[in-house]
Image (cartoon, rainbow, N blue to C red; front, side, top):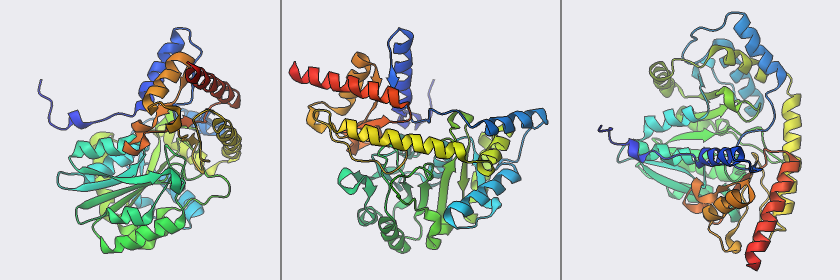
Amino acid sequence: MHVISGFDRIGEENAFAVLARATHLASQGMDVINLGIGQPDFPTPEHISEAAIKAIRDGHHGYTPATGILPLREAVVRRTLATTGVEVSPENVCVMPGGKVTMFAAILMFGAPGREIMYPDPGFPIYRSMIEFTGATPIPIPVREENGFAFSGEEALSLVNDKTSLIILNSPANPTGGVTPRAEIETLVHGLEGFPDAAVMSDEIYDSMTYDGEEHVSLLTFESIRDRLIILNGWSKTWAMTGWRMGWSIWPDALIDNVRKLAVNAWSCVNAPSQFAGIAAIDGPQDAVFSMMSAFDERRQMVVQRMNTLPGITCATPKGAFYAFPNISQTGWKAKELASALLEKEGVATIGGPDFGILGEGFLRLSYANSAENIERAIDRMERFLIEEKAA
């Protein structure tokens, strides 16, 4: 068979490959601690699950509008106003079957041979994968440890030119836990006034996950780019709903009908009961969210403290999300080789930095979305491995 050109350019998210290998090793009897997968280890709050069950019992099991039921889009509008101070129209909201679908749609709209799409590096691997699939040229925006894993507005702006069709931003960030300060975002946004044809997609899926008083700055707060801004957000991280496959996106007037038609052609609509669960998540009690964030904060501090005691490793303090991105360059190991050895020999699953981009070499990604006890055990094993390897 002859598959059409382009599919050979699609990459993967290696966290799922690591998860598969970790699951296999566990099935063979190994005690595996997974610090690789990026999903909360907490259950979906009960009132959210009950809302979906009620929706099923009430007969909400048919098709819905392609962009989502109006009450859910109105809930997204309320939540957006509460978190950003910006009022958007429910007509500009599209409910998606997961956060990835927003980036898929945006990159598909703006990617083509001869165009350039900018994305964070290290960053979520699907950005580059989809850019390459469309035939566009991927242009990395460096995210550097010395900048607290924030992008530099001036450096990002220096990469923009007349071929730039889309700029992808992500803060708080996967895989680094970095939070980009307002000043850097302002520099970029003001500079983009000279490039009116460059659209922006802001991945804000971790918007509620910041620490130490750090501020999440939504790109929606910059009026000058709202007519070309796509916001990616969703339920997966904040409300521990990864398997529900629920995301939302906010599109400018010029693009919303494009994504509506894509939905009609590709996924029809998001499953109906989940949409009622989404309303309950936004409008219901947030106690579980606060408890989860408190636990993440405690684990974050523990991870940073412990990792900085390991031989050859330094670990900057993440300011957002639930990832640490320790520097392992002084261990003598390449990142992916170390990640593989830790999994195969010690049963500790992590992700090598190069899986997140060219600038990821010398780093591992650790998710602290696991119990404090498991994290302690995992770091004990890492310490043992590094000491024994150094002595060998």
